[in-house]
Length: 95
Image (cartoon, rainbow, N blue to C red):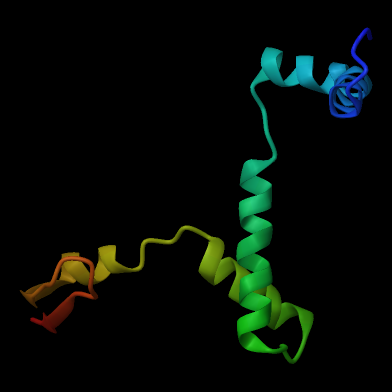
């Protein structure tokens, strides 16, 4: 490295230390963004609740919030929609 600027030398050293991981990212296009997002959601669930009675209850709440279930599909197929506001919950009337 020919630069004498400390910031440039620091960045060059960091790139040199992590070059294998940088090249792996460009060859496979895999990141940990999904796992980081899931971890953030789990931490939010944990903060919001303030604690669970046991680990099984905590696990069930994680599955409920992060499982990707479409809970409104059954309601919309088996009920008549009385009115809906975009972006809000749908109010249904059972038939």
